[in-house]
Amino acid sequence: MFKVLLIEDDFSLFSEIETRLTQWSLEVEGIKDFGSVLTEFTAYQPDLVIIDIQLPKYDGFHWCRLIRSHSNVPILFLSSRDHPTDMVMSMQLGGDDFIQKPFHFDVLIAKIQAILRRVYNYNSSITEVKSWCGAVVKNEKNLVTNQHGTIELTKNEMFILKCLINKKNTIVTREELIKNLWNDERFVSDNTLTVNVNRLRKKLDDIQLGRFIETKVGQGYIAVEEVE
Image 1 (cartoon, helix red, strand yellow):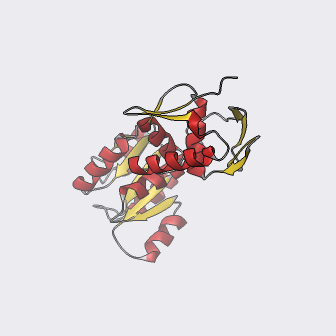
Image 2 (cartoon, rainbow, N blue to C red):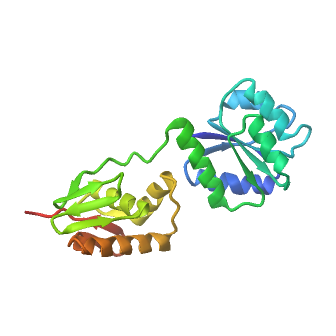
Image 3 (tube, rainbow, N blue to C red):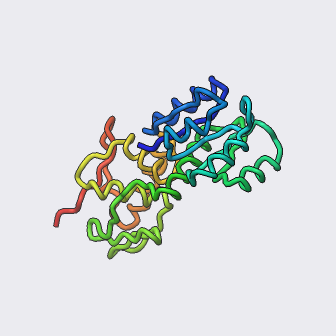
């Protein structure tokens, strides 16, 4: 579980961010004394720092300088001010990313996920797939080929196919698919997942494989391995 130190004095926003992040198995800690941020940072040893620029006593830039003098932990800045200089200053002081308030939480999640993947090589650990039902799956090129032809998939469609094939003949729940897509920096809603699966199945029909992706109503999807 990654540890996030959230340095935000707006209690309402802090609570909302904490709730969203803990839903994705991130541990979140706040600041008790805004005059002792460095002390609390050192005690907590977070994997990521999210810091507001406007804070009591000292601003986020001040604390970023101090944190950077002790650690290379990734830092994501938050700001309610519409000043390009804030972003420039954030980057010059060693910040890894910047997001302006108000923001959509999907954007915040995307930035956090990108930082964790970049710094800690965090990914969904989906196993590579080379073949399925007599077809060759070329992940890097998003191609599926068999004796009936070749189809090109979108990145989301390929990722879904790989998730299903890796657990062939086993039901993969919709929740599991959505979470795996999130872990790989692809953000989908429940409706978007349905659209992607339907498009995937339609493309697979072109090489006579669509019937091997089955829908299990109320549960999820299953990739059936062709039996010779």
